[in-house]
Structures are given as C-alpha cells and as structure tokens.
Amino acid sequence: MEQLLYWVGLAAVAVSALTGVLEAGRQKMDLVGVVMVGAATALGGGTVRDLLLDRPVFWIADEMYLVVAFVTTLLAFFAARGLKLPPRLFLIPDAIGLALFTIVGTQLALAWQAPWLAATLLGVITGVVGGVLRDILCNQVPLVFVRGELYVSAAWGGALVLVGMNGSGCSPVLSAWTGMAVVLATRLVAMKFRITLPTYSEKA
Amino acid sequence: MEQLLYWVGLAAVAVSALTGVLEAGRQKMDLVGVVMVGAATALGGGTVRDLLLDRPVFWIADEMYLVVAFVTTLLAFFAARGLKLPPRLFLIPDAIGLALFTIVGTQLALAWQAPWLAATLLGVITGVVGGVLRDILCNQVPLVFVRGELYVSAAWGGALVLVGMNGSGCSPVLSAWTGMAVVLATRLVAMKFRITLPTYSEKA
Amino acid sequence: MEQLLYWVGLAAVAVSALTGVLEAGRQKMDLVGVVMVGAATALGGGTVRDLLLDRPVFWIADEMYLVVAFVTTLLAFFAARGLKLPPRLFLIPDAIGLALFTIVGTQLALAWQAPWLAATLLGVITGVVGGVLRDILCNQVPLVFVRGELYVSAAWGGALVLVGMNGSGCSPVLSAWTGMAVVLATRLVAMKFRITLPTYSEKA
Image 1 (cartoon, rainbow over the protein chains, first blue to last red):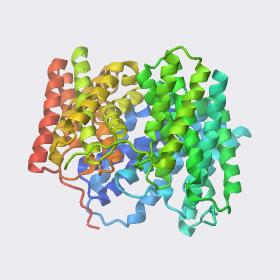
Image 2 (cartoon, each protein chain N blue to C red):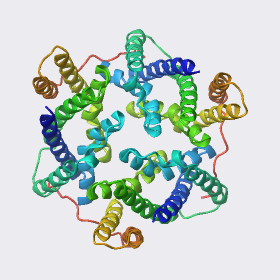
Image 3 (cartoon, chains in turn green, yellow, purple):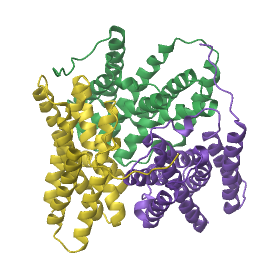
Image 4 (cartoon, chains in turn brown, orange, red):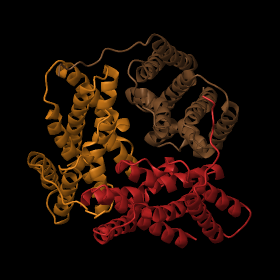
C-alpha cells in the first residue's frame, strides 16, 4: 500500500507539473516562470496537507518529488513549445492530477490518525490547492470556482467513497483505486455533460 | 479559563460559518461550494494561528469544530435559502466572529509563550484570516481592505487591551470578556458612524 | 556565520518593511494598514520558509525581528509622509531585500539538512513571498509576475551560486556575500537594461 501511494504520488506530481507548463505556456511566461508555475502546481497541494498534518514536507524530505517535478516541467516545456494544442486539453491531466492527489491526501491523513471527516477535507485540499495556485499565478479564474462542472464535489465524493470502503473492511488498495476512479469519472462526465449541482437561490 | 476559550472558539466557528453561507449564497454557489466557503471562513484563521505556533491544527485534533462548522453551514443553507436578507446583515455576525477569534487567538498565543507583541499579531491574524478567505473565495474585496471602517484596528485594540489587563494582574476571564467587548464595540461604532483613521498622505 | 545570518536577516526585515510602507503609502492606507503591510512584507517570506522547514517561526521565537519591523515601519511612515518620492524608488530596497532574504533562506535550509535543490527553492520562496504579499495587499500586480525584468531568475541564480560555492569548499561567509552580490547585480542590471529571458512561444 505504501508503495502504491508513493508511485501514485509521483505520477500526480508529474501530471500536475504538465498542466502547469501548458497553462504557463499559454501566458507566454519565460522558462524560469514556467518552471516555477510547474513546481507550484505539482507541489502546492501536498505541501499544505503536510503542514496541516505536521508531517515533514514531502518534497524536502524526499528529493525524488522535486526531481520529477523539474524534469517533467523541462521536458514538457521543450516538447510542447511550438505545438498547436487545443486550449482545453489541459483539463484532462488536471482531472487525473485531482483524482490522484485527492486519494493520496485522504489516505495519508487517515494513516496519520486524522478523524475521517477531517481526512476527506485534507484530501480535497491536497487535490485542489496545486491547481488553484497555478491558475492564480497564471492570472486565470481558478477552475474550482468555475460554475457548472463538478470539481470540489468530484474530489469530495471520491474521498468519501474511499473512507466508506475502508470503514466497511475493503482492502486499502481496492478502496484507493475505486476512489480515484470515482473522482476521475465524476469530473470527466460532469465536464462532458456540464452537470451542475442545484444552487442556493436567495430571492434577493 | 480553558473551558471558556473552548466554548468561545466553538461559538466563533459557528458564527463565522454563518457569514460564509450568507456571502456564498449571494454569489449563488451550489451546496458544495457553500459548504467549502463556510468551512474556510470558520477554520481559516485558527488554522494559520496553529501553524505559526506549531500547535496541532485545532479542527484535526478535535473533531467537534469540524462538526459544528458543517452543521451550522447546512442549517444556515436551508434556513436562509429563500429568505430576503439585507445584504449588509452579515456584517454583524462577522464583527462577532472577529471579536471572538481575535481574543481566543491572543490568549492561546500567550499560553503558548509567545512574546506579547507577537501574541497580539497572532490574535489579529486569527481574527481576520477566515473573513479574508471568505471574501476572496466569493470574489469580493476583503472587508479588511475596505477603507473607512476600523477592522484590523478594532481587533488589534482589543488584543492590546487583553494583554494590558493580563499584565496588570486582572483575572484572565475578565480580561478576555473585556477584550471581546472592545473589539466588538469599536467595530460596530466605527461601522455605524463611518469612523476612520488618518491616512498617510504623500503629496504625489 | 550565524552572527552574519542574524544581522543580514534583521537588515532584510528593515529594508522590506520600508518597501511595504512606500507602497502602502501610495495607496493612501491608514497607519494601521501601513503597519500591517510593512509587517507582512518584512515577515512573510521567512514565515513560509520556517513553516516548510518545521522550524519555530522566527518572529515568534525572537522578538527582535518584530521590533525592528515595527520601528522601521513607524519611522518610515513619519519620515516619508509628505515627501515627494519617485514611484519606482522602492525597487532598489526591494532588490536589496530580495538578495538578503534569498541568501539567508538558502543558508538556513542547507543548515537544516534540506537537499540542495530544495534549499535553492526555499531561498527563492523566502526572497519573493514578502513582496508578493505586499503587492497583493496593495492591489498591485506582484513584481514577480511583471515580465521583462529578471526577478525569480535573479534570486535563483544567486541561490545556485551559493550552493555551488559551498559545495566546492569556499568559506560559507564568502559564498553568502557572493550569492547576495549575484542576486542584487542581476536584478539591478536587468531592471536597468530591461533584460528578459526567451519565452515559451506556442504558435496558438
């Protein structure tokens, strides 16, 4: 299980760094700017999670994460440069990063003895903070706040499924994969069909 | 005294979650959005305080805070939905939350051996961060930065009164209540009469 | 060496508080607002660094930093009030603060056993966060994101020089001074001649 979390964590870092490069590239940032946006996207969510749980910050404790973030960023920078990519393309790796980070974050929080409700919230925070940083640094309205496509809801749903399956005795590995699938499927389906939740409608 | 701080803390969480719901509601967010804004408003200030003091984060260490924040948010969501509320109404619970959080934050920092000047600053941070998060998430200019109605000054004044009374040997409970009264009264009077501080006037 | 870091840290706090006052003054904030912007500029970068490294936050552990930040802010407020200053003047103390904080941050991170790549990133964070907070609080586009004048690149270059010199056996004091000189010189020359890095140019 720890092995699984480690590899999923690295994959999440790589895929998030990629979304950072794609968006920073559209803003015509220079190389150092792109590297910084890539690093912030890849490392932001897990950093906040580790601070809240009072764990050692993952990319300071284990250099591998930083190396993966930098290498992915540089490769993506030189590979994507000059390619003509549809602007919404980066929503797919963004959804994958959301799914992976949310589940890793929830699992880590549970392993760190956080109560289950707090653990789901920590999972959501791990999942969304990197993307929020990326969008702010690139001067975009954060995806979390774009109405009409479940984002936080998708992450939270997956975290709740994970906690529920864990609690009813499923194997942690199965729960983790199911949770990831729930986040990813919810988000992709909601984007495709523009599914929304009912809103608070004050008659003012 | 610890009992008092605990209950005041829970009350501050509830009243701040309420302001989050009122403002998120005006933005026509969906239920999950409203819950997240309510949670961020209620938990943001104390979270930053706990990180700075290197204490365990309060809502991870004690589940009760999170439960209160969620229950208040859900109740407020369904109660306020459809009601026609004056838009400035939420300034009253906001001022109460500011007063409660500032005093709890200052007291906790003093109990944690922070020097008095740092303790007043930590109190102000505890008091204002939740509201700043709420306003940013709702795309409003944070109340802290609206000119013409003492906000940070009210919080800081109350924190200084608390520290002064503590230092001159008053009972901690009396100092805490007086501090809260000072913050609340200053803020409400300043709002009512639009009291301002003199500004820096560079002749440029 | 520790002595040097301590004094450089105090100087960085003072010079950053000054930039905060100059910018908050231009926004015609009141005294409490100016004090808060000064404090955030002076203390923000080091605070984030200490949280990431899980060190005690420097201005809570040692009161001197807070005193220097407050005294500088008050002196600058009353001295600069009414003076007619060119608006870009504050870029000079800003560059000095960037240089000092970056080097102090990198050194501290190395002393705290962070891997070298993480240490350079922590140095950059220490250098830029205060200014970013200042610019956000004053409703300006953060200097880090203004295109066309090396900012992060200057800081990162200096941090890399410091790490390289340390690694090849130079005295830490010499490495520190050289690192600071590199940051400051790069930033000033880039501002003067508007030097830029090549940008990512997607043909979209």
